[in-house]
Image (cartoon, rainbow, N blue to C red; front, side):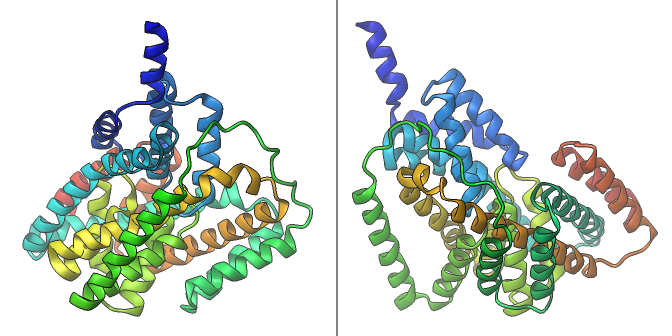
Length: 392
């Protein structure tokens, strides 16, 4: 009897337990997608909230839909354990430490960024960020561009992004090219057991209604916050390829289209994001704070994470059927190729924001080599900070 109760407690953890477990993990969630291994160790190994096969299905889902992969996996584990409420508890718990720290760093940056010492440090770290994006381009390129057809899609996307064509149009075009050019690509995987996910329709509708009410309230009370929320939501919905995909789109929309801040300031926001746990897309908090203070930071963060969360909750019960379609696999491959082109374009754009001299070139080159050698990005950024203090 006790053994049955123990199994039931493992499979049905309290919402507070889910929140607390992911909150503790979120405090040290450096490394982005690398955190998935630690989530698996906790959820499958220690807590036994789901089995390994279900966890692998979750990874496949979270890599397919938009959003920060590690954040989405936290929500998926909660969804499997306790339904939509569990997904929300895990999602918020995992992301809360990054939001609070980024908010504090944004507050400090707004008051100190004109000091000479701070300017020097960020000047050096901007070269580091160019190397980080260049390494991401190489990494995604080697895994996504398996043949000349995919390279063609990536180059076409890079050219269109360079011409500042609407990102939604580029992604739709890449999806179409993926269907047309990847005709011999293997079909989707066969369905597999993915565990049981409870009914999500009613909770999902409630989330939609509350979200719509929130947007309506902003529209009638604070138009500037409404436009910020719509923009961040739109960026999240088209950011296929993980949280890193949001950054170049955000740069395009905020710096180049709307001129809400300068390119170097945006790069500084990414730098601050490297000092926080959690996904790099937490840069949204910095953008929101610089545009509209604490209310802007809160709205931008919620809007950046809410759409992909709702998508996860809505798609999870049906994903095992959808992913078996060869058309679906081809569409996703095309979208991921466009993401490589996007990263290539933004590497160039970020590079144009840096005042290059020999120290900047040397620091960027050393950073790139360190990342290629698989050194942890947190230590790379800390080393870059130390060098910047003494060199720049």
